[in-house]
Structure formats: C-alpha cells, structure tokens
Length: 158
Image 1 (cartoon, one colour):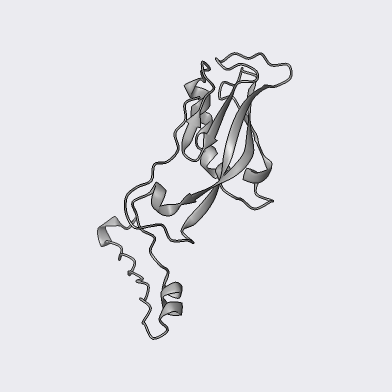
Image 2 (cartoon, one colour):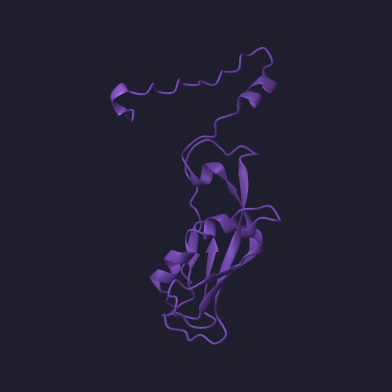
C-alpha cells in the first residue's frame, strides 16, 4: 500500500489542547441492482483515507472521474458531525456516469488525533475570551464594522 503519515514540522512544541480528531475512511465499490458497471472500477475495489493521505491496495487502480466526484465529500465525512446531519447518515455516492451502476460506500473506520502544529505552519490565534480569562484587566479588541459602500449615482438604475 502506498501511504505516508504527516511529517512533524519544526517549531514550538504543540499545545496540549491544539489537537483535533478526524475519522479514517474506507471507500468501497458496490453495484446498484440492475445497472451494469461501465466505468473502470470493479465491485469490491477500495481505497483508504487516513488524515490527508489516500491509499490504494497494491496493483489496484481507481478512475479519476469517480474520484473527482468523491473528493469534495471526504473531508466532511472525516469530521465529527451532528447525528441528524445528512453527512452523518448518508454514506452511498453514485458514480458520476449516469449509465453506470457503480456506487461508493464511505465508511468511517476509526479515529486519529492530529496536532495543529504538525499539519500547518499557521499558528492558532487565541480568542478574545481566552485572553480575557487569562488576564481580566486586559482590554479585548473591538470588532471592526466597516461602513457599507455608498452607492454611486451613476450605477443606480433609472
């Protein structure tokens, strides 16, 4: 299997609470009843997603058009969602070819904990509430509300 885990980036040690959880996913190819498999995926084909890393079993391929249909959904399926959210309850995605019987079942297989500092170089900014709790005498910055632009006389419809 081709697979690599996130590399640790140099810098300050991660804060204890600067972690987040993602689900590991497996996508399995199924077939809709009564429809032929037209595209280049076979019944039982799979791939795994662990963090940001997608892995295919050795020697297996997966068509890019089917993958393109799945990719926007996978990061959302990796995150913890409300029990009533459709992203939690719906797990079957149709092949983008309307004549193909291919269906892709997205299965949450486990969880993995990531440190913020290991996956990005952007530091976590503390919220004003956290800063105030640590230092009650500190002033919290006020949010800016820019004025909406005034309409140009020439741009108004006559």
